[in-house]
Amino acid sequence: MSKFPFIFSAGLVPIILWGAYFYAKNPRKQPIKEIIKIFILGMFSIVPVIIFDKWFSRQFIGELQEIWPFLNHLLAHAILQLGLLILFIITFVLLFTVISAIGLKCFYHLKWSKTFTILYNKLYSLSPILIFFSIFLIIEVAFNLGKAESFILSFAGSSIIFAISEEYFKYIINPFLVYKKIHSVGNAMVNALYVGLAFAFVENILFFYFSFGSDEFTTLFLYRSFFTTLLHVGTSGILGYFYGISLFSESMLTNYEIEKSEYHIPIFLRKSANKENIFKSISITQGFFLAALLHALFNLLLNLQVGGTLNIALTKVLPAALAVFLAITVTLLIRSKNCQIQYGLIGSKAMPEADFEKLRLQISVLQHTKEIQKANQTAAEANENH
Figure 1: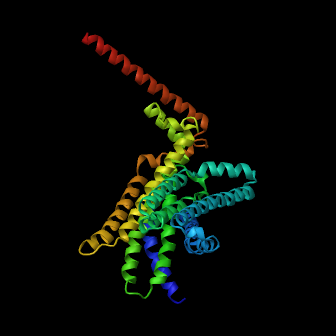
Figure 2: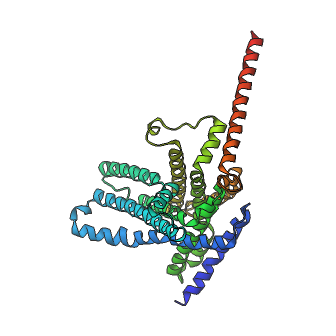
Figure 3: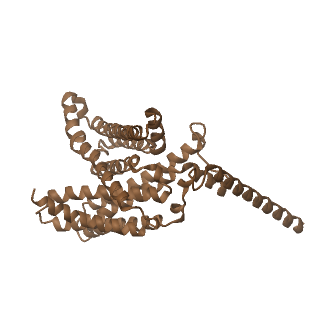
């Protein structure tokens, strides 16, 4: 245990430095007390990943295979692992929502069932995880039938699965971030960024603890402190950006329709749900898959087996460049106009909903007037040409 204080302190230093950097880059500074609260809550996002990795995907599946020998078949084993992961994620989504709803009932005396429904609809979307399940199931069957191999159990498949599970468990910590205080896309993005930082901190501590004293410790410490930490922050920030868009789906959709006149949605979705729910699901799905694929690419490059002079370039330089690119992208997004618009003020004392409706009507009238003027101008030019 004597090595733990050193590892904890050494692991905390880069986290404080990166946290200070992103704090400085945020135009709307959050109270330090709130950031610490988000960071502590974010540390719990790694717990489901550890439980699934150490118990569900190994011990529990092994016990099931002893009871039912047919699960030892390659396809059955892969589908079982994938199915358990999805079930595990859904269970934690429901569990986190229940805990949050009970908290609101205790502190604000709100009706539990109604609060649960509002929280679930407001904060969560299972669309990306169900799409992921369908895609992986198709790929697995194709591999198993065509090549007699398992994609899910392969190195590439397992790397992608763990990248996806880590991103989703970072995402589902959101109900504990006091969503009523989120007034902008940037606010939601920065909260998610600090969750990613907390996840990286705990993961780094575990890696440092088990590699302490080895020849590779210094290299591992430096690489994880700089680039792996940035990777987690970057992917969480990307998903947080799209999550922020989904939070303010009504306001964002209204703005989009005013600017573009119409929001086009796929024909097969038009009758199954309203525009706001579709807009929300598409936003979260985009962010989730983008974050997960970037995370998976980093993992695959880092563990690529390449010999010769290309080894360092492909397994060290490229992942580091990807992490830095993500950090720069997140920094630029935080400061963008789209992130700083205070959508969350609508319906508050700062901007009552009635005032917003008047403003939206004025903008709509101006847009319509501009279109009429443009049409008249086009008609006049056509008459002149004739």
